[in-house]
Length: 317
Image (cartoon, rainbow, N blue to C red):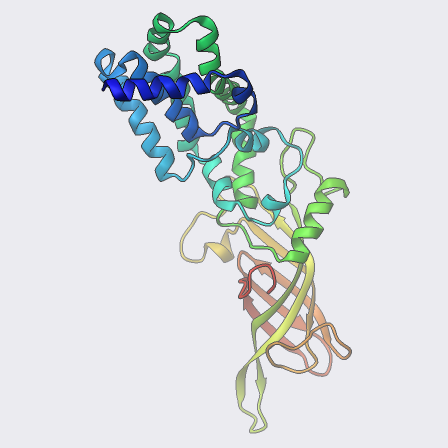
């Protein structure tokens, strides 16, 4: 225990250096570890076994939720920002979006501040000078500021909408859609977030698909299924209703959180991996509900086309 206590004091001494504290980016896991170091200094286990156990449970929760490396800046950005990053639009960090919009995580963040400012802080005041305690608790104070932001009732709805649009269940965009939507939410009316930071319900669709299916008569006059390459250019609209995405097996059709419609293009001839934008392409319209879409192309080779939104090559098609 003495060796451990000495090591902890060494870690604490480094943590108290002003230059390092100023440059540090705080994470949930880092705050928990700092509080556990402080716990070793005061021997919290002997003072309050309940608080000691609670801190251990919180650390385990953040680790299991893959949130221990989530920075306070990341969480605060979602709460306060008026535009989203390229990474969020591209869904690179969709698991993080899902993590910091989860009610259980927000409740655990609040619990962490309660633990920090309870008997642990009272015991530290007996061991450290006010300056040392302020330096040690700098990330905890930053966490407290974040909790005040999370406590605003309007932010709960904002986070729920971020989860619907950018979280784990949201559509995956290709590279062209990432660029178009990132630029649109910076300057294009209708795609701008609201004045208080709510995400816009609109998203540009510009996609190429190689796995759509249609049916056509063969030379023997038999109706056969065929693959067809298609392109969609349209508008996706997110529904942020409280019940969207909830239901039975047909929720993606009956009650999805997003739908889209627009222009639909098919290659001149049925077949996979062909180009629907070259001369002679067939044009029409499409409608999508959730991950399913149906398109209709006009002309001499009319087709009714069905497909599922999925990418074979990430950010390509």
